[in-house]
Length: 473
Image (tube, rainbow, N blue to C red):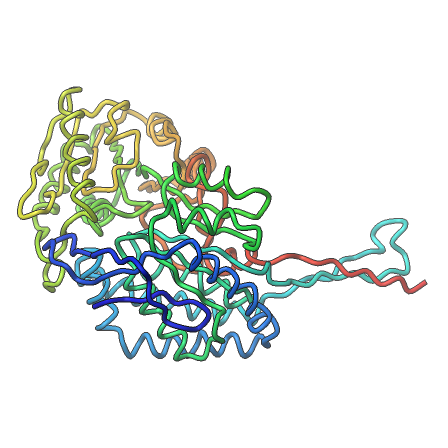
């Protein structure tokens, strides 16, 4: 398969191509175009030139395009899931879940397009406002530069494209290097769904060339980025005064104080820790268990983790497959070794089998070990006993990140205390921090980001609020 760039409604050849390999089998699966600076500039010019096409559409028309897209994606569900599994090594059963979420995300976008309204301002609430009538209206911000990560190649693209189209923006999309096929797939479906030519442009290549060109362009009005804090900080520096929306990483923690069924909690935590090989921004990385429950919980967790099937992502029974790259595999093992040297105990996993890192359980982990204090993005979990809820809250907060956290408790006072004191963007009570539905506000504090995603909230970021005041005197 030899892909092409999508610029100004045309599928364009590149001068240079890079081979794309399966993370699991290392087999070549495609040739990916590497956009030149001139082609990136062409994509930006296209988005500027064709912005009026989407901006001047009625709300009904924009919503209808998104509705058609959901129907097309539903028809091609099997093809979409297989593509995700092939290029990202996401197990097929998990890939189907992502496709289903992507369909929902575009549905929410179509629905929210119809609710993107301003408000009446009570001008006469001020002494000098008498005789004036005020209201606000929402206007598209213009050209959006969307830079997406590898871990949800279809749904995180949807969280950029869906809101942008719903409010009437044009887009230049730069997907992660490893997972461009899903982005091209969606571009073709949007073309079929009736999106005007040039409103969406998809360019692939090195982030230092393609990404930087988009970020630094004076013709791009907003950057929306999901990825690492390190890259996010660079974008802030390079972007100038344009709006920058960042959804970054985390090392999510959960506190287990009490539970009616500890085995069910362990089952949830196993899913939260190891889904998509732990390559999820809100993947459960740190578990803090009250001391009197620790041994029982550990046994349940270990037993549930042992049931996971490792192997080929294209097989229907696979739960865990390869990390996105050999580099990430090497890094993850080195972090485990560092933790062991600092006193950590490996209760399970820690080794590579058939190019897959076996789900790993670590105890007695130092808070300064990378597997604890940094974002591991691998199937690695640390489990630590605590003596009090206050200690658990302090441990979760002892992080430069703050995306989501969870707590299992039967005590309403404890739940309220945790919801108030946990320094995160979202608190899941009696659930894992990995929980997310696509219409909820989603975003973090500290180095986990500066925005809220979720369709309605992303749309707010992607619009300008204009005030109109009528003087009736």
